[in-house]
Length: 221
Image 1 (tube, rainbow, N blue to C red):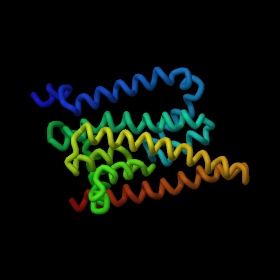
Image 2: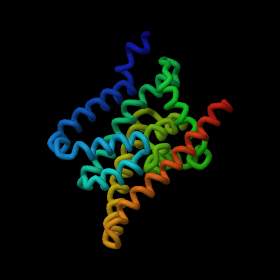
Image 3: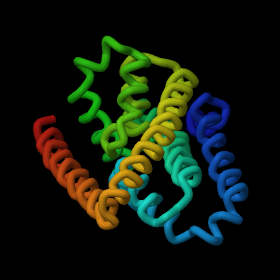
Image 4: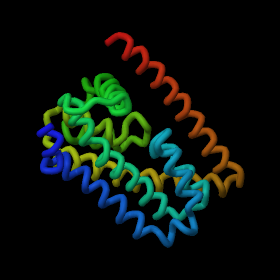
């Protein structure tokens, strides 16, 4: 009980509170824009949860959201997600709390870390940053934070690494996808829509394969 009472005095507790502050601040700052673009932003959030930035960014651009807004939404979603879930991952791994939801998140993250740790571990912080930069659901900041724990990094170091990498990832992929769609639309007006469908299909296949492999991983533990 003492550990739970003192949670908000720990680095993880501070991270959780910071996540709430970022969420509320982002909501109020973007509120005028949300009123006009709420459907596209909602679609971005839903697809981001399901498939990561590699899905949410093309969806946002496909909904004709401004590039800067697509970048901000993708970056904020990463930051808030890791700030909210990381503290509970630490508590779960320290056996302070239990729960099926957080248990599944930890198991999925641990599976991905175990799968890639041999080639990522020698690169340390740079490896985590690159891993978070890749815009897939299984390579996001939450998995990156678990990898940081595996390397024995401190909470501030982990949060700085995954936050910077997440923001740079959102920035790079937003403008890269936008460039690709603009070029494609100059060739054929239907190409951007086709490109979004192809990207979604490929990421769905990758996601289903990951789910299958994780189930097998869970059975062998």
